[in-house]
Image (cartoon, rainbow, N blue to C red; front, side, top):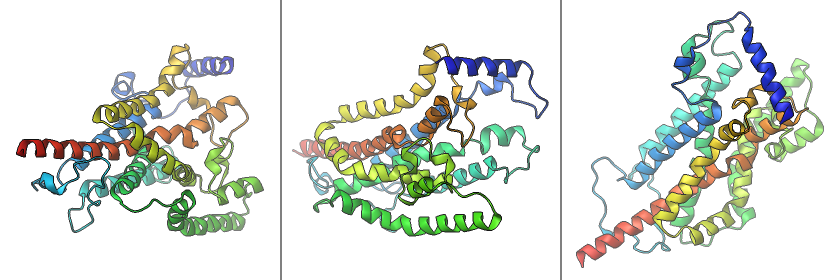
Length: 339
């Protein structure tokens, strides 16, 4: 806390004598937006989750009538209808959201590396409202992974795979391309005469565990692949988490309570420092690749560690469970009405 207060005091002094540069946005304009990237990430994640829930609970095609209650599962424990495939009721909203999120993330990476807008030519619009917060879509993909995996598990009547088999199936779809990209990046570094990462950093990245320790993610090759490392942890925990979800979330009220709890957790990153009288944007003192202070490790932990995105993955799982419970309740009302 003393270190955080000292950094906050130094930042206040720096603000008092700002260096010459591009015009900064006014406080009035900035106040229209949530303060800090974690607040923006929470807002984007909640909006995306709400849209996904509306798409799941609604009909698969615009204007299509709901199927009769007798064709749907009336019991929560029974399988749901298979996830609609393209050409047979495919949900276009999920594909469009994936496209938008992927493009915005790429633009955000290009912007941060100054390849999108030349240095010194960044205008106010691109700085604050277009490219600089593309990273906020990353939690959406964690949520989407939890939603799709849980829906597939709840919809299947087959015996679930073992944890090793479950992880192996999913790793087989990403690891070949991931390893090829990693090898190409290392060869490019060698060709440019740049320093290679330490052996333990390469070993962690080879086994997709680089995001599990806060000192590693920002020092590895292809830093953006930390997402896959965090996803691996969720795959390992998915089986027990799904069974726990089915046993404990047995009503729509419990599902909504869990969704609300998961939605409130990101605000702790802003509320906790503010309650202690510190700077709500204390994380800005961190510099990419630095790990020499407790503040650096704390920021890297919040940015990359799977535990800090577990609530987002659980949010997606709970959305799939909410859909199952809602369809069961709708079927039960239809049967009681026909009786």
